[in-house]
Amino acid sequence: MDLYKVIQHLNAEKEKLERVIASLEELQRFAGLPLPPAPGSGKGRGRKSMSPEERQKVSERMKKYWSSRR
Image 1: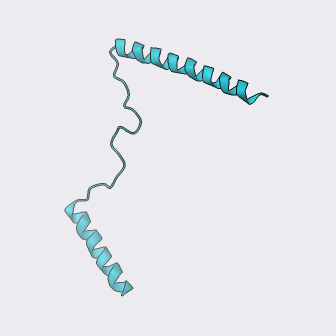
Image 2: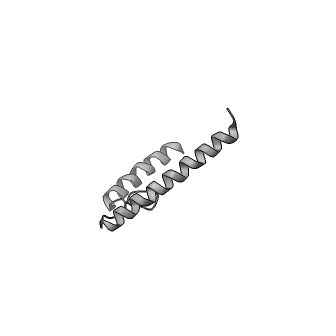
Image 3: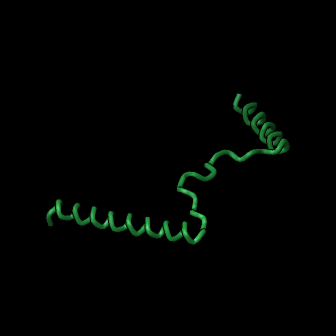
């Protein structure tokens, strides 16, 4: 199979999909439906916040750990 033809076919399919997606987004916008958030635009992954009690427990646990390592 000719690689050039495959690439052309895939690019044509990509353009069709982009047109369909754009038209669906327009319909959604005119219907007044909210657009879903873009990927990666939401709250990022990170550390959860700790309560003072949790922080104290971690502190005690780490003191015990490091004292046993010395």
